[in-house]
Amino acid sequence: MLLKHEFIGRETELRELRALQTLRSASLVILEGRRRVGKSRLVEEFAAGQKFSRFIGLAPTPGTDAQSQRNEFLRQLSEQTGLPRVQSDDWGTLFELLAREVARGRRVVLLDEISWMADKDPTFLGKLKTAWDVQFSKNPQLMLILCGSVSSWIQKNIVSSTAFLGRPSRDIKLEELSLAECNRFWSEHSRVSPYEKLKVLSVTGGIPRYLELINPSLGAEDIIRELLFSRNSVLLDEFKLIFSDTFGERSAIYRKIIGSLLKGPASLNDILERTQRTKTGDYSDYLNDLVTAGFLARDYTWRLKTGEISKLSRYRLKDNFLRFYLRYVTPNRPAIEKGFFEGRSLTSLPGWESLLALQFENLVLNNVSTVIKKLGVLMPDVVFANPFFQRKTRLQAGCQIDLAIQTRFDSVHTCEIKFSKSAIKPGVVGEMRQKLEKLQLPRKFSVRPVLIHVNGVHSEVVRSQFFSQIVDFGELLTA
Image (cartoon, rainbow, N blue to C red; front, top):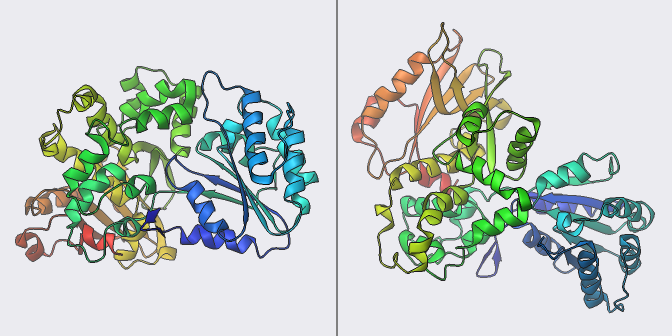
């Protein structure tokens, strides 16, 4: 999250961490989030000017065993404290050595990639829990932060574990940066259009590490080519690193699930059919892991009449980088490595506009709170906001709304998220009207159609006064 040494975003998380330091007791903090989302960088920013110790687990490889992790921890401990490198096969001993070093005064300790650190040693969590209860927690000015990219492991082994029940002070899930924060990676004086920024964000999403790598003085296609379509592109191996480091031996299964969602959202049954699997408890766990990791979203529909969430849901690939990589980098990897994309227009790639449409919709859905604010709706007045779909039955037609925002005043904003490389044509009015005719609204409800676009709208669309509000993507970038 650096732009000319500037830290961007994360104000809420920094406030939460600073508030914990005002308490008269030690704090145990869980920090989760996708790789490259800026977890370690957040802690570094928070700990600036304080006594800070960071320990990083070794990435899992065939040659990495439990003792390798302990040896690496001891090496880092020795470097940061000057303690001798005493060989130990007991995490209890290692935690005791660390606890002695941070027993007094304001201290911040980060155990980074904790699932790697604990890999292949079933005693790790028990020893950590004991060390917290007996030693770490005795320093009222200590903050111990447990951080990791494998959110499903953290949820199962720490957040939901009876052993750690009641001990964590906070469980912070780090999401992508907001659109307004992404916008700050370009100079406020630049004249880069929202459409150009959309093309870049269709690759990076709101992932800070990817945004740090862009050269804002270049055009969108040159930025994307530099990131992914040159032989020495810094992100060319990124997908493999994400999946092998996060999911290990089961990465192939997760890869198939992701692949089934490249062209749009799908129900569980659709995913099972596309991956040629049968419904099992394990498979549901795989989907939940991907949701917890932040790669997928599970979008539930709901009953407008009561506001109750339905059992019906669809899974959506919410991570723009993964979709872009699998759609365009994976199948073209041999050509990229031979330099065939030097000077080639990326807009000639098959399905370029349909991909931008999906990525545009993702960016809007991942920033629903910004949309709500832009529409002038107060958050406490929102009953539910999500993609809405109505299943076809004998008594009702099928219907799908890109984003619906229901308020407690018996009204629903129905948002059409429309991508076009030119101004949106008047036909959008008829398309939305047909959707609303199929929508089963309670009799007393008001409906307010909204159009969200990126490249302008035809004057006839404005003159029709059909849409209650027309929102330019550029407005969301600066909201």
